[in-house]
Amino acid sequence: MRLTATVPATSANLGPGFDCFGLALDLCNEVTLDTGAEPGVTWEGEGAAELPTDGTDLVSRAVAETAARFERTPPPAAIHGHNRIPLERGLGSSAAAVVAGVALADAVLGLGLDRTAMLEVAAGLEGHPDNAAAAVFGGFTIVVDEGVVARFDPDPELRPALFVPSDLAISTEAARRVLPDVVPRADAVANAGHAALVAIALLHEPDLLPAAMRDRVHEDDRLGLVPEAREVFERVRGGGLAVCVSGSGPTLLAFERHDVITPEPGDGWRVVRVPVRAAGVDIRED
Image (tube, rainbow, N blue to C red; front, side):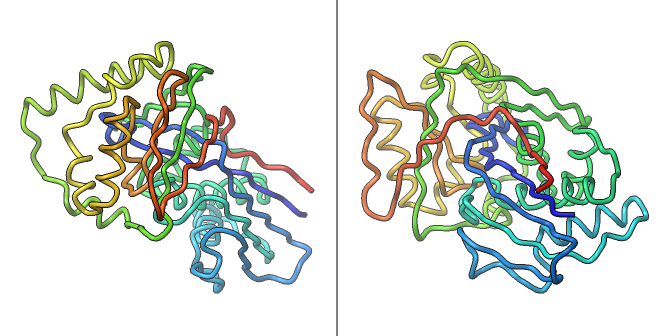
């Protein structure tokens, strides 16, 4: 059996939607599991030289741990990943790997998991349900801590643009360590209002995004870790575009407009324009 999982990059938080909002982007990794090939793990594309090939990678671990959760044993197989999602750039590469592994385990073992069960397993393994939800369901997702997930199709006029640094990276753990344990009431209230407005803007009123996409909980602290990203962030926002830190950064997600010129980020950065991806993880049998 030869199965290939296609799973999208994701941008979490989306400004004030901290740990709740996720957006699937049409920048996808492909991971193939082949039970008829010599067992082993190989990679190509983004971060290929950095990823382990001894079975300790997130895809292999997700396959094994999903099987163990259901008291099954995965068959020996070759795993090959073609990565397009940059590592440690705030684009959900870890969630994509885990979701791919869960989906492949489900398919090869015939577990019959629906999307909600797949998310439960993936979020338990990866620890970040906002990214995992968008990777599983596609589109725009909202997750709340009672395990409720809502998925929506965003406005088709959205024009996401990723500002991706070439040499800057940050781990999710490092980005979380700088966040305060207590948030002032005024900041919590401001974020609640802006998060509601961001959701409406993404679904129906993209012109509201520059005013809506304001955060007072996490972005300032995270931008403090990477002054180069703060400089680009302020240039993009000052130019009139809605912009946020993608996940834990340092990639920035902006939404382009026909009436605004997108600022150039400068040396060491690239702008990647990708549409929203309606579909989440997909499995095909080759």
